[in-house]
Image (cartoon, rainbow, N blue to C red):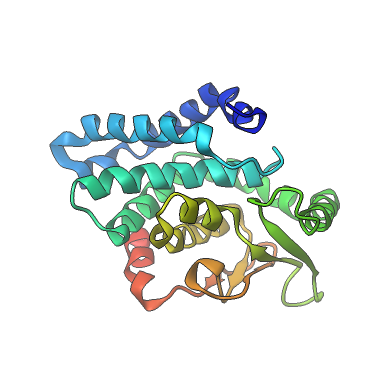
Length: 238
């Protein structure tokens, strides 16, 4: 086992606790998709996720990029178990979207809103600027590569362009690139819950050259979703 995989194995207990937290908060969603087999299939997904942990790509150990990889591993674990039981990538996307909504709804609104100022503080933006510069050195080939976009003072406070996506790379390496687009709609949930005011028109997962995140504190969420994924988002709004 390499030193880089040791990074994740040393934190395996924490990652499994995160999985359990998501599974508990989304129990009703899981039961609606898995039916009477929900408990057994949740355990199967957990084992698959645990097996994936030492395979996670090392992306520098910084947040939120490492957490993105962990979440991607959860999605992949759900997809692989779903696939063995005859479910499609789209069905997995619907399920994960609903699970994400249930997870966020398990927290009080006031608590979630406490995170909004943190996302728009000078310190946060300085950290993202620095991270963008570091990412462009490509020290971690399997990591994200991003550009920081200065706000225009009116339409958005700041932006982040993803030029390379660690989650897409990981899923492709795992032979499951088709599930990558179903990660993207989950950003809608986080934007609405945390007050990001996210606008995004394109994603790498859908074959574009960039994921163009633009953030406006407290603004409306306006994220383009391809027609094939539209009902995934509709399901989340029901």
